Image (cartoon, rainbow, N blue to C red):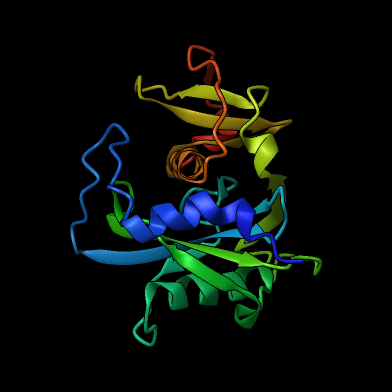
Length: 211
């Protein structure tokens, strides 16, 4: 069953063109290298959002929670093409099953020097998504929007450098960094955000700090 009302605020915000958001660093696109990630929602009144755990064997950011995605390849025609191709390679998502809602303005990621575009899409769900290559993806996680917006899981992450950012805690899963900023932003755009205690500061677990 289609639930357009669940995405009405988000689709309106995407049509109007969300203003690039300040997330504590200069994130203006540099045009050096390009990547795209997929924010994949199920088509439900309370949508689920898909995350992956990066494989422990990866050279960059092993074991961290992220959105499916990766670098733009020469054959990619659009940023949506990149995000959907990467999601297929990582978790077996069939591109034709996804309805693309739009994109967020690209943000520059200093650690990788990529301009990252977030593609937002909706699919029916129901088909299990699993790591295709364990050397790239360790696990797949799905969390309801209502749970992501809950004060119970929302904290402010404290980096050893003193940098503070939104974060989400689900048991031993810790979502922080760019991924958490994107989720926080989309919760606001989608009208899903709820009040939470930003003064609840939690140090980022050591296993999530590996570069």
